[in-house]
Amino acid sequence: MERQVAISSELECLAELLGRARSAVALTGAGVSVPSGIPDFRTPETGLWAKVDPMEVAHIDVFEHEPERFWSYYRPRFEVLGDKQPNRAHEVLAELERRGLIEGLITQNIDRLHRAAGSKNVVEVHGSIETSSCRTCAASFELEEMDGLFDERGVAVCSVCRGAVKPDVVLFGELLPESAMARASELAERADLILCVGSSLAVYPVAGLPQVTLDRGGRLAIITKGATPYDADAELKLEGEVDEELAALLAALG
Ligand SMILES: [Zn+2]
Image (tube, rainbow, N blue to C red; front, side, top):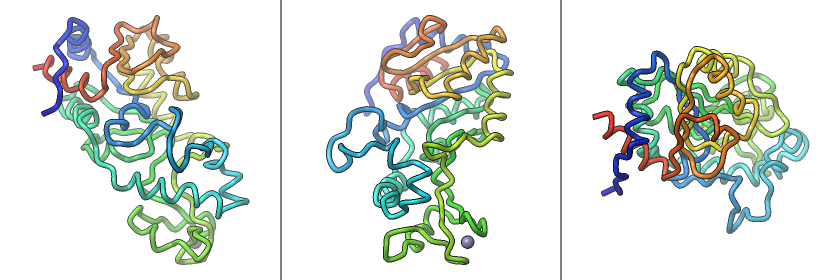
């Protein structure tokens, strides 16, 4: 049994905001996947990777010039992510879309769990581990195929042309794909409610999206632990566990 969050007046307020919204959009970050056992890399880590700075290793320059080092860090992560399952937070967000209460979902997460939970209109602004592509011949490989691509150095090489295969995720040092950001901005512009879940709203350009909605007269609701730069602008803020808060929201919606 999952723990139940009592339906507070704030949850009722959020349920009402969602019910009244003409076009609501959800924006999610790493906090949504924490209940699935995927740590937010910005929180201090223990164990094997405690001394590795992801911003330094998961960088396009390291991928290009030190592929063995890149993959020694990235391959285990990649494999761990591939085994993870959606949690209640992902499921509730998918249900909100099915019920027509949110129009789409913008996520900073690369773990593909929103799609796995059934969300359809998903904009993955940082890409996804779902596929990887050869940088030479553009051959595309599913996550399940990746294991067969690693050579004796532990570097992923294309089975067609032996070119370098890169995960279709945005690495540090890379720009966000324009098409994804354009779709995300369009959703934020059209939204009269943006529901931000599990994101500290600190990483740009995604962190600018709530402002886009606010500037157009839309409202903002936040479910996340810890402070965000938007707390003062939010209609309401819930600070419990994201999966429990969202489960309670669904109950409040009836
Ligand atoms: Zn190739």
